[in-house]
Image 1 (cartoon, rainbow, N blue to C red):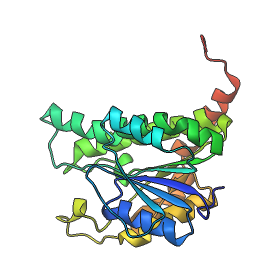
Image 2 (cartoon, one colour):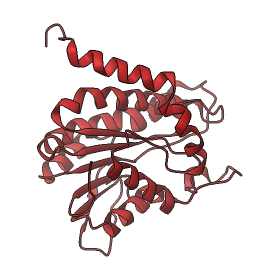
Image 3 (cartoon, helix red, strand yellow):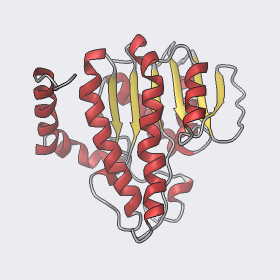
Image 4 (cartoon, rainbow, N blue to C red):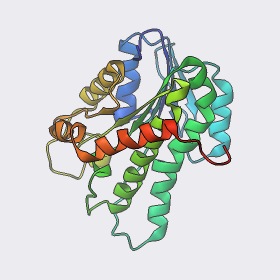
Length: 243
Protein backbone atom coordinates (compact mmCIF):
# COMPACT_ATOMS: atom_id res chain seq x y z
CA UNK A 1 0.00 0.00 0.00
CA UNK A 2 1.01 3.60 -0.55
CA UNK A 3 1.43 6.32 2.06
CA UNK A 4 1.04 9.89 0.87
CA UNK A 5 3.11 11.26 3.75
CA UNK A 6 6.65 12.15 2.62
CA UNK A 7 5.86 11.07 -0.93
CA UNK A 8 6.20 12.81 -4.28
CA UNK A 9 2.90 13.23 -6.13
CA UNK A 10 2.00 14.44 -9.63
CA UNK A 11 -1.56 15.60 -10.36
CA UNK A 12 -2.61 16.45 -13.91
CA UNK A 13 -5.43 18.94 -14.42
CA UNK A 14 -4.44 20.39 -11.06
CA UNK A 15 -5.71 23.96 -11.27
CA UNK A 16 -9.42 23.38 -10.62
CA UNK A 17 -12.12 20.94 -9.60
CA UNK A 18 -11.05 17.54 -8.31
CA UNK A 19 -7.45 18.23 -9.38
CA UNK A 20 -7.16 21.28 -7.15
CA UNK A 21 -8.74 19.36 -4.26
CA UNK A 22 -6.25 16.51 -4.78
CA UNK A 23 -3.34 18.95 -4.53
CA UNK A 24 -4.70 20.30 -1.22
CA UNK A 25 -5.39 16.83 0.16
CA UNK A 26 -1.90 15.61 -0.74
CA UNK A 27 -0.43 18.58 1.12
CA UNK A 28 -2.71 17.94 4.11
CA UNK A 29 -1.46 14.34 4.25
CA UNK A 30 2.15 15.45 4.37
CA UNK A 31 3.34 14.98 0.81
CA UNK A 32 6.93 16.08 0.45
CA UNK A 33 6.47 17.45 -3.09
CA UNK A 34 3.37 17.92 -5.24
CA UNK A 35 3.84 18.55 -8.95
CA UNK A 36 0.78 20.31 -10.39
CA UNK A 37 0.32 19.79 -14.11
CA UNK A 38 -1.74 22.47 -15.85
CA UNK A 39 -2.26 23.74 -19.39
CA UNK A 40 -1.74 27.38 -18.40
CA UNK A 41 0.66 29.04 -15.93
CA UNK A 42 -0.55 28.61 -12.36
CA UNK A 43 0.80 29.43 -8.93
CA UNK A 44 0.29 27.95 -5.46
CA UNK A 45 1.31 29.54 -2.15
CA UNK A 46 2.72 26.35 -0.62
CA UNK A 47 6.42 25.95 -1.43
CA UNK A 48 5.97 22.18 -1.65
CA UNK A 49 3.93 22.66 -4.85
CA UNK A 50 5.80 22.82 -8.15
CA UNK A 51 3.61 23.95 -11.08
CA UNK A 52 4.29 22.34 -14.45
CA UNK A 53 2.98 23.39 -17.85
CA UNK A 54 1.73 20.06 -19.14
CA UNK A 55 -1.03 19.61 -21.68
CA UNK A 56 -1.49 15.83 -21.66
CA UNK A 57 -2.14 15.88 -25.41
CA UNK A 58 1.29 17.41 -26.07
CA UNK A 59 3.96 14.73 -26.30
CA UNK A 60 6.68 17.38 -26.05
CA UNK A 61 5.28 18.88 -22.85
CA UNK A 62 4.79 15.44 -21.29
CA UNK A 63 8.39 14.46 -22.11
CA UNK A 64 9.68 17.74 -20.73
CA UNK A 65 7.77 17.23 -17.49
CA UNK A 66 9.10 13.68 -17.15
CA UNK A 67 12.62 14.97 -17.68
CA UNK A 68 12.16 17.55 -14.93
CA UNK A 69 10.97 15.06 -12.30
CA UNK A 70 13.57 12.63 -11.05
CA UNK A 71 11.53 10.89 -8.37
CA UNK A 72 7.81 10.10 -8.37
CA UNK A 73 5.76 7.95 -6.00
CA UNK A 74 2.17 8.67 -7.07
CA UNK A 75 0.93 9.68 -10.52
CA UNK A 76 -2.69 10.90 -10.64
CA UNK A 77 -4.14 11.17 -14.12
CA UNK A 78 -6.94 13.62 -13.42
CA UNK A 79 -7.00 15.87 -16.51
CA UNK A 80 -10.07 15.30 -18.64
CA UNK A 81 -12.81 16.87 -20.74
CA UNK A 82 -16.51 16.15 -21.16
CA UNK A 83 -18.36 17.54 -24.17
CA UNK A 84 -22.07 17.24 -24.86
CA UNK A 85 -22.62 15.43 -28.18
CA UNK A 86 -24.72 12.83 -29.97
CA UNK A 87 -21.95 10.79 -31.66
CA UNK A 88 -22.60 12.38 -35.06
CA UNK A 89 -19.29 14.26 -35.13
CA UNK A 90 -16.23 12.01 -35.14
CA UNK A 91 -13.95 14.92 -34.22
CA UNK A 92 -15.71 15.26 -30.84
CA UNK A 93 -15.06 11.61 -30.09
CA UNK A 94 -11.44 11.90 -31.22
CA UNK A 95 -10.89 14.98 -29.05
CA UNK A 96 -12.16 13.25 -25.93
CA UNK A 97 -10.21 10.08 -26.65
CA UNK A 98 -7.13 12.29 -27.09
CA UNK A 99 -7.46 13.79 -23.62
CA UNK A 100 -9.20 11.05 -21.62
CA UNK A 101 -7.50 7.95 -23.07
CA UNK A 102 -4.31 8.75 -24.96
CA UNK A 103 -3.39 11.56 -22.55
CA UNK A 104 -3.13 9.24 -19.52
CA UNK A 105 -1.45 6.60 -21.69
CA UNK A 106 1.32 9.01 -22.76
CA UNK A 107 1.80 10.35 -19.22
CA UNK A 108 2.07 6.83 -17.79
CA UNK A 109 4.61 5.75 -20.39
CA UNK A 110 6.69 8.88 -19.80
CA UNK A 111 6.80 8.48 -16.01
CA UNK A 112 6.99 4.69 -15.83
CA UNK A 113 10.75 4.61 -15.17
CA UNK A 114 10.34 6.81 -12.07
CA UNK A 115 7.34 4.82 -10.84
CA UNK A 116 9.14 1.53 -11.37
CA UNK A 117 12.11 2.73 -9.33
CA UNK A 118 9.88 3.87 -6.47
CA UNK A 119 7.49 0.90 -6.79
CA UNK A 120 4.86 3.59 -6.89
CA UNK A 121 1.20 3.99 -7.81
CA UNK A 122 -0.79 5.15 -10.82
CA UNK A 123 -4.24 6.59 -10.13
CA UNK A 124 -6.56 7.09 -13.10
CA UNK A 125 -9.56 9.30 -12.34
CA UNK A 126 -12.31 7.80 -14.48
CA UNK A 127 -16.09 7.85 -14.12
CA UNK A 128 -19.09 5.62 -13.49
CA UNK A 129 -19.77 6.33 -17.16
CA UNK A 130 -17.11 3.71 -17.80
CA UNK A 131 -19.77 1.17 -16.74
CA UNK A 132 -22.70 2.62 -18.67
CA UNK A 133 -22.90 5.57 -21.09
CA UNK A 134 -24.85 8.69 -20.27
CA UNK A 135 -26.55 9.57 -23.60
CA UNK A 136 -25.96 13.29 -22.99
CA UNK A 137 -22.20 12.70 -23.16
CA UNK A 138 -21.75 9.44 -25.10
CA UNK A 139 -18.30 10.23 -26.52
CA UNK A 140 -17.05 11.03 -23.02
CA UNK A 141 -18.52 7.74 -21.81
CA UNK A 142 -16.77 5.85 -24.60
CA UNK A 143 -13.45 7.48 -23.70
CA UNK A 144 -13.83 6.63 -20.01
CA UNK A 145 -14.77 3.02 -20.76
CA UNK A 146 -11.63 2.73 -22.88
CA UNK A 147 -9.54 4.35 -20.15
CA UNK A 148 -10.95 1.89 -17.61
CA UNK A 149 -9.93 -1.03 -19.83
CA UNK A 150 -6.48 0.53 -20.19
CA UNK A 151 -6.27 0.80 -16.40
CA UNK A 152 -7.20 -2.85 -15.89
CA UNK A 153 -4.70 -4.01 -18.50
CA UNK A 154 -1.86 -1.93 -17.04
CA UNK A 155 -2.74 -3.21 -13.56
CA UNK A 156 -1.91 -6.74 -14.66
CA UNK A 157 1.04 -5.80 -16.85
CA UNK A 158 2.80 -3.63 -14.24
CA UNK A 159 2.17 -5.79 -11.18
CA UNK A 160 5.44 -7.62 -11.74
CA UNK A 161 7.32 -4.31 -11.53
CA UNK A 162 5.71 -3.44 -8.21
CA UNK A 163 3.65 -0.59 -9.68
CA UNK A 164 0.06 -0.47 -8.43
CA UNK A 165 -2.66 0.82 -10.74
CA UNK A 166 -5.89 2.24 -9.29
CA UNK A 167 -9.13 3.10 -11.07
CA UNK A 168 -11.29 5.86 -9.58
CA UNK A 169 -14.93 5.44 -10.61
CA UNK A 170 -16.25 8.89 -9.83
CA UNK A 171 -19.92 9.78 -9.71
CA UNK A 172 -21.48 13.26 -10.02
CA UNK A 173 -19.17 15.81 -8.42
CA UNK A 174 -19.60 19.55 -7.95
CA UNK A 175 -17.27 20.76 -10.70
CA UNK A 176 -17.55 23.05 -13.72
CA UNK A 177 -18.01 19.93 -15.85
CA UNK A 178 -21.29 19.07 -14.07
CA UNK A 179 -22.56 22.60 -13.47
CA UNK A 180 -25.52 22.18 -15.82
CA UNK A 181 -26.80 18.94 -14.23
CA UNK A 182 -29.47 19.40 -11.55
CA UNK A 183 -28.63 16.28 -9.54
CA UNK A 184 -27.04 15.57 -6.14
CA UNK A 185 -23.26 16.05 -6.34
CA UNK A 186 -20.37 15.21 -4.02
CA UNK A 187 -17.91 17.95 -3.09
CA UNK A 188 -14.50 17.92 -4.70
CA UNK A 189 -12.90 17.87 -1.22
CA UNK A 190 -14.75 14.72 -0.14
CA UNK A 191 -13.90 12.99 -3.42
CA UNK A 192 -10.20 13.86 -3.06
CA UNK A 193 -10.16 12.49 0.49
CA UNK A 194 -11.83 9.27 -0.61
CA UNK A 195 -9.38 8.85 -3.50
CA UNK A 196 -6.36 9.07 -1.23
CA UNK A 197 -8.04 6.86 1.37
CA UNK A 198 -8.51 4.22 -1.32
CA UNK A 199 -4.93 4.54 -2.54
CA UNK A 200 -3.55 4.25 0.99
CA UNK A 201 -5.72 1.16 1.62
CA UNK A 202 -4.53 -0.42 -1.61
CA UNK A 203 -7.96 -0.58 -3.26
CA UNK A 204 -7.75 -1.45 -6.96
CA UNK A 205 -11.08 0.21 -7.77
CA UNK A 206 -12.03 3.27 -5.76
CA UNK A 207 -15.63 4.49 -5.45
CA UNK A 208 -15.24 7.98 -3.91
CA UNK A 209 -18.77 9.37 -3.58
CA UNK A 210 -22.26 8.26 -2.50
CA UNK A 211 -23.56 7.41 -5.98
CA UNK A 212 -20.52 5.40 -6.99
CA UNK A 213 -20.32 3.72 -3.57
CA UNK A 214 -23.78 2.27 -4.17
CA UNK A 215 -22.22 0.21 -6.98
CA UNK A 216 -19.07 -0.88 -5.15
CA UNK A 217 -20.33 -4.09 -3.57
CA UNK A 218 -21.94 -5.41 -6.74
CA UNK A 219 -18.80 -4.55 -8.74
CA UNK A 220 -16.35 -6.20 -6.36
CA UNK A 221 -18.44 -9.37 -6.19
CA UNK A 222 -19.59 -9.40 -9.80
CA UNK A 223 -18.71 -11.44 -12.87
CA UNK A 224 -16.77 -8.66 -14.61
CA UNK A 225 -14.34 -8.20 -11.71
CA UNK A 226 -13.95 -11.96 -11.35
CA UNK A 227 -13.11 -12.20 -15.06
CA UNK A 228 -10.52 -9.43 -14.73
CA UNK A 229 -8.80 -11.39 -11.94
CA UNK A 230 -9.00 -14.61 -13.95
CA UNK A 231 -7.45 -13.03 -17.03
CA UNK A 232 -4.71 -11.41 -14.92
CA UNK A 233 -3.84 -14.79 -13.43
CA UNK A 234 -3.67 -16.36 -16.90
CA UNK A 235 -1.37 -13.57 -18.10
CA UNK A 236 1.06 -14.35 -15.28
CA UNK A 237 1.56 -17.92 -16.59
CA UNK A 238 1.49 -17.43 -20.36
CA UNK A 239 4.57 -16.43 -22.36
CA UNK A 240 3.73 -13.81 -24.98
CA UNK A 241 5.01 -14.84 -28.46
CA UNK A 242 7.94 -12.70 -29.50
CA UNK A 243 8.32 -11.10 -26.06
